[in-house]
Structures are given as structure tokens and as C-alpha cells.
Length: 184
Image 1: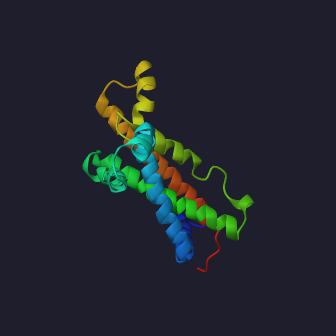
Image 2: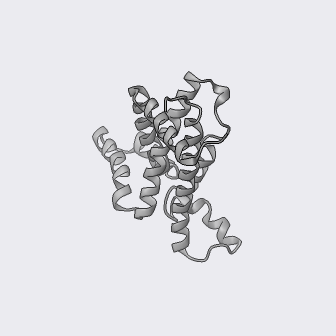
Image 3: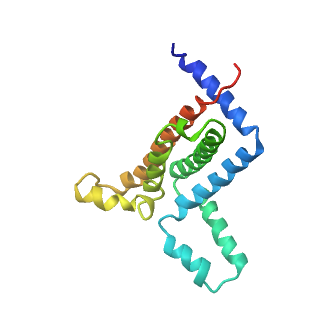
């Protein structure tokens, strides 16, 4: 007998609490969230990243400030829907990764639902910025087949991909929580 969705969501939230009451999974989630947000922000500017790290004639503090500004730019230069999508995706990615690690360590690798988060990661990379960065991967392809005519739509496409990735991560997290046995 399949439980009602409301009951399954309640069990999922209890399972999340069961996992994240352990500091190591909470720290893993926070750390991987920050790394994923950084990866999305820098994924299409790797040349600049390499230059700043290895070749730029600036001190270590200036390099650190440069990276911090990358995170600050989420709140100042990107569209608010896109920024929120990147942040939500990063947080959900961290939760999903922690849940996968927990399931592997406590239940077993073979029990992990297939494709737990992989598709979401692809959506996030495709939607990782504005037309000049994230969605520039898709812009030429979609424009050449006549699917996109405006830059406003291309900007919104990045946000759409991030939110689709977030939905896939929520589903993955939900499936992972169903493997964890918690008391009602």
C-alpha cells in the first residue's frame, strides 16, 4: 500500500533531520553547496580563473577578494531570479550529495536510485549565467534553428534551467529519504 504524499513528505523531512543532526553531513552539505555555487559561477570563465590563480601579478589577498566578489556578484550583478536559482540549486546539491554519502555509508551503494542528481547538474551548468556566460552554450544552437529570437528569452532560459535542475534535485532528495528508516 502506497502512503499518501503528505505522509511521505513528513517521513522525508524526518529522514533529512535524522541525517543532518550529524555534524559531518551538515558540514559536507554546506561545503559542497558553496563549491557547487562557485563551480556554476566560474564554469564558463575557466581561463580567467586560471589567469587569476597562476599568472595575475596580484597578492594572495587580492586573489581571495576576487573569489569572494564572485559570490557577492550573485546579489549585485545577476538577475534576481537567476541568482536565486543558482543559490537554491547549490543548496539542494549539497543536501543531495550528503544524502547520497549517508545512504552509501549506512544502507549500501546498490540502494541509491539511479541518476540521483546527474541530470540536475547538467541543467545547472547549462543555466549557469546570463546570455554572455551560462546560456551562451545553448544560445547559438537555439538561435540557429530559430527557436529563440530575443535576448530576454535567453536570459530567462538560464533561470529556467537552474529551476529545472532544482526540481530534479528535490526529486532525488525525496527518493533518497525514502530509503532511510525513521520512527513515525
